[in-house]
Length: 173
Image (tube, rainbow, N blue to C red):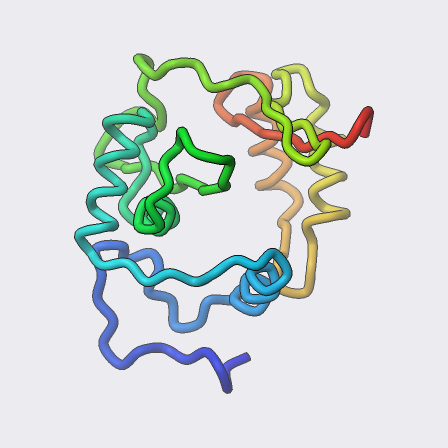
């Protein structure tokens, strides 16, 4: 991996969380882009700042600057959250605030369907052990380590609403 991915000499960005010396999962991300017909996008600092402001003002998500980079790419393509389904992860809470989500946010769409797959928010009483076991079985790879206790603790917060999880269902699976 390090033959092809190496750090820039003097990286700088308002999204400081992406300035890794080597992105550990870049090979899997590149494979996913190739398999899905996706693309890599380059955005400037202004686009990242605008995406972060948009997430806070319109989506009511209090993401940190680094956590808004994916949204900046989607916005650079001209897509918005009202166009066809795309997936963007808004992550990393802005620690200067007390909340991850605004209490004035409109409720999320509870589900949507695409290509015969139903996507929906899991209920608070969904068994966190089932979720953990599924994640461990299908999410572990040589480049993606899933630590048991922190992930179990995270999924346990589903019951309180501190953690929200979307699931993809094919029929009753």
